[in-house]
Length: 405
Image 1 (tube, rainbow, N blue to C red):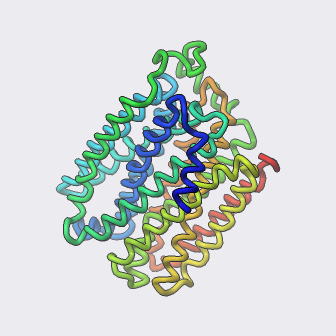
Image 2 (tube, rainbow, N blue to C red):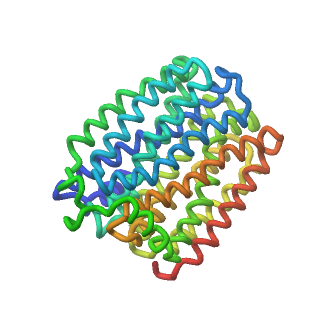
Image 3 (tube, rainbow, N blue to C red):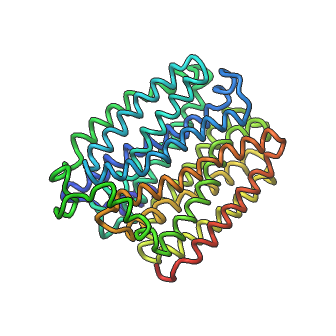
């Protein structure tokens, strides 16, 4: 059934080289997102290596997401000027180098530098990914975003699952360093298969030269004055905060609070991304059919309920079911991304989208620091309840969008 669903979703997205665009962008996102969730999976070993408490470990994860956030605006500017192919290939290459640094870090300060570098490299990917898909699939961007983000969820499930099973035998350093060749290979694929821009200084529509930075900055207030863009963006911001706090410490919570061994906690954590992939594959097409507002409110509402259930769930089977349902919250991303990008001015689309992502992810990146501090204060359960409350605010934002959109 899964194969049939995937085949049906891919059918209208082929032809004219678009299949290669989708494949390349999706595989790149599979590794980029999968590696960003590898660190939370290996956090118990990283903490032991560098003798860290939860707050400091949470700070390391926030560094990755914070640097990722800071790169969104520059990445959008670069995508407008030098083309998505160059930005995506550079992102993957920088990520490869940063992972090598993480794996070899002799002290925690160097580990933080590697984390920051990975945040920078992976941060280049998001805006260029979104603009590339929007250009290639103007009539069914929801489905293209859904498939790409589902691929990221698959990577986020498989890579941590393998790492959780193998970390005892191989160690976290070898697991992180072993991913470097994959990033190099996908960078080469992006450079060879994605379309070249007609001219590095020409916009995608073949019109005038991309506007200078001063013009872009001046255009930001008017571009962001769209009420629906602001509401959808605020919803994403609150949602990201909760998502970051959840994913950074769920494996640690399962091991330290629930008493589940890491060999079992790893596969349970992987179910988060299996649920995410399942939701993302169909959710883009559902939004194209029923409207973004309906889908966003429904998925975010389920996200509130599942987070509030975290402190009361007990038993491995119950946890497996809950974590799968928690993963469905990831279905928000393709719908919200497509909704926002489609409402931005074409001539500064990459820059404005990048600026928005910088703001949203910068705030969202503090979610892991928040949960880490709450855990050190003995309020791990309360932290997840608070994340449920934050997600409820996102529901209110999405409910304010126009009906039928």
